[in-house]
Image (cartoon, rainbow, N blue to C red; front, side, top):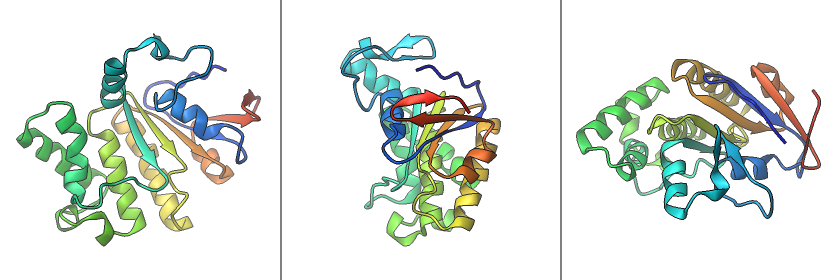
Amino acid sequence: MSLNVPDGVFSTIVGKSGSGKSTLLSLLGALDKPTSGSIDVDGRNITKLSDRKLIQYRCNKIGFVFQNYNLIPNLSAIENVMLPMEFAGMNKYDRLSRANKLLKQVGLDELKQNRRPGKLSGGEQQRVAIARALANKPNFILADEPTGNLDSITGKIIIELLQKLAHSENTTIIAVTHDEGIAKKSQLTFRLKDGKMIAN
């Protein structure tokens, strides 16, 4: 299959459970390896990268947003956002400054920035996860059911935030969802059925 998403566009992959949405996202993000064939992302065959190059690819090119947030529970919100930048070799002052800026950008004030995930609401944890995904200025953000654990009002706010960030950060965002309401808000929609892309 082939999908073309321009820079700065919020797009969705829609399909029923078991259609292959999350698998496709894992392959694009180099979290899984294909049993056959190759995966070309932005003109680069990521299936031929060494383990070290794959780590660099995931660290510098991709930001992940998960349904369950996947925040580290014993780190504060701001420490969670700083972590990918530490892996990328950024100095502490710049990490702190960018993490603070990103968290403000997603609507988390300084008081809440110092709280651990367990002291934040689901919507606030997802804001932290989005800020963390943006930390290393990735080309792509891959979001797997980013509103799956949120109520409808909070979910709507998170989708509007992702739309806004795609444009302001010039980052391509691909979100997996089974929610047609979210698909209608995206600039591009891809539909999967039984592991194959089908026409809209």
